[in-house]
Amino acid sequence: IISRTQPNDPRARYMLEHGVPFATHGRTDMGLVHPYHDFDNYAFAGEAVRALAAKGRNRLALVTPPVGLTYFRYTVNGFADALSEVGASEVPFNTVSIDHTIEQIRMRTAQLMRRDDRPDGIISSAAAATLAVVAGIEDAGLKLGRDVDVVSKQSSEVLHLFRRELLVVNEDFRLAGYELARAVLGWIAGKEPGSLQSLSKPSEVLPYRG
Image (cartoon, rainbow, N blue to C red; front, side, top):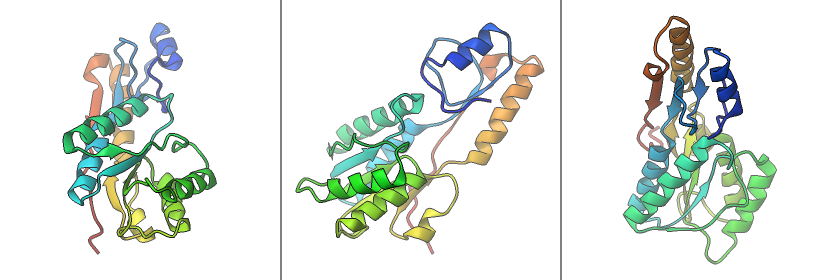
């Protein structure tokens, strides 16, 4: 099982060429059929944009996955398409990704939020990055839920313990592990690789319900 999948992933190509059963956590874009399990990041970004628009937010920024990974493209495309759908605009925030350190994300978020054209909504692709985003918002003297709303993915239900105002989308890593193991075992057992592909949909955008 391999993760941090790239569009043209040399690990997947090598294993296909050498007949090694495998599955990828994420898709590739090589025109080669292999087992995978992925989270629908296109749908996640779109749902996040629509949730922010429903709260009256129309200047949105995105903290992206690393640019070299396949799900970067799905996330960015879902964000852009949904912006057009709801009539919102992007505030570029391309100086960081979720792979940057917590302190880098915090510092650059604070810089962004001190600008006159700051976003009033932010989408974060990972919970750890969200902690830094919120710290940067507060460093700039702004209040989450009043001056800006944030939608974040999370793989464990922790973000509402940090700030109740956060909007969250759950990604089920237990399901991912189950599907990936099932795919590898299925290929070993002789199933067709193309029948061992799965895509999980994001949950609805959830406010705090305590």
